[in-house]
Image (cartoon, rainbow, N blue to C red; front, side, top):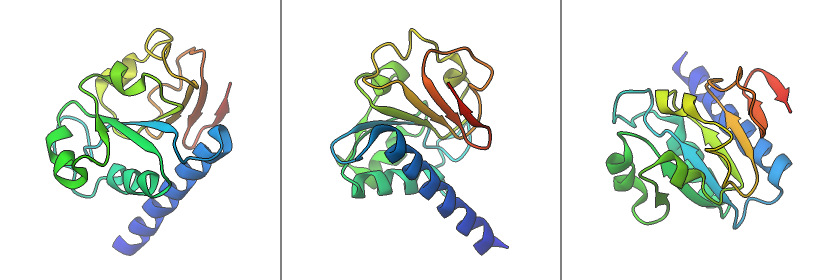
Length: 150
């Protein structure tokens, strides 16, 4: 059963990277924000976090990755060192990005608004936790498992 879960997780990461390509073109050189690295909210634990695999794939594709997580930045730094950028605020992570991927259901990501996304270069968000699905945002939005909105 564990290998089936692992296979599903790897497929979801492939789906996310494919969605990014479909919406922003080539990933190489593009600024991509990953919001949430901890495997669940309210912890700094990144073990078994799908975000780690996503970040590895984005780096391999040549993306400029900037991450934000309220608690897990230090643990993430131990893995990626200076190969990615670290944002102390969600707004800093989104600034100048072509895409943002919400990976962890942190409460603060529920507060994303048009003002928060104002400085994104391309306003495209992939929401793997569907926390923005009921918001009326002026962005291109894809909630995993929900289909397309806007």
